[in-house]
Image (cartoon, rainbow, N blue to C red; front, side, top):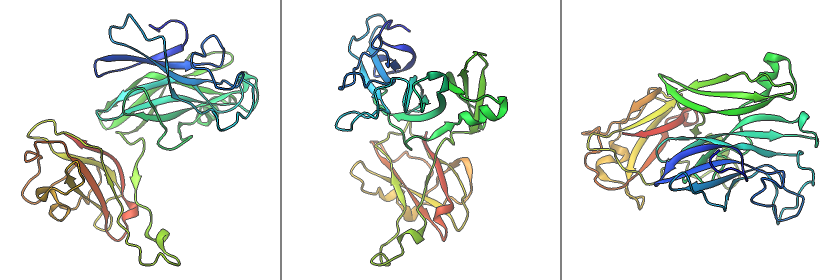
Length: 317
């Protein structure tokens, strides 16, 4: 912990735009509640972040990066520091290029006795290292119930570790537990590579009903502006559930959302095979050599059953 007081533990975030960041837990004690709750006595455990350009001189002010606590105008549920939904000890951030993926301690307690607290590992994302959000609020990436089933213990608290790696076709995360009495063992959770979450289309039947029978169903997503890593770069998708009846088509847009003719949807060969890295091909080209400026990627769901297709990641490189 290079910061010293004002933060509990902490994770060193990836260096971003030449600046170092460290995040960790602020509160519930006034000793490390550097960002106080607007209502005295209502403070809980929150995630805060400090910054430094030389790793020696750190900001005295901290950013409130992520909270699960009600703040005004929402009234606090109680004034008991160990009760409720909170954030424990920051988030370990994994740099994936245009997004940072974070694993954090998702704290729960129905009492004010922290011996009865439980903790899952939750998921946050960030685009600037400092401000974080949950793609799916309260989603449990790793549930403490799995630990309880294995050990027979109740009140298990999972603690994210400092290691997330892609090895072969698997994504692995090492973590530990906070227990009474402590055991200090290391666990590992694993998923298929980069498959921590996915996009899928809403079933067509959702749009059926009075006044909605003529609504066109056009399931798609559009990325933020991206850049190709070089003239030989291509686009790949990590997806499953694909077939001739449930496929993806990819097109490239300019930053103003206008299609680029060479990479239009009608020139894209449908991606019908599932895989961790399926290359997108347009008639006449595979690469992005014709693009010398920032662009956006649009992915379209197609077929008789578009809702079967799950898109986990898009790669440009």
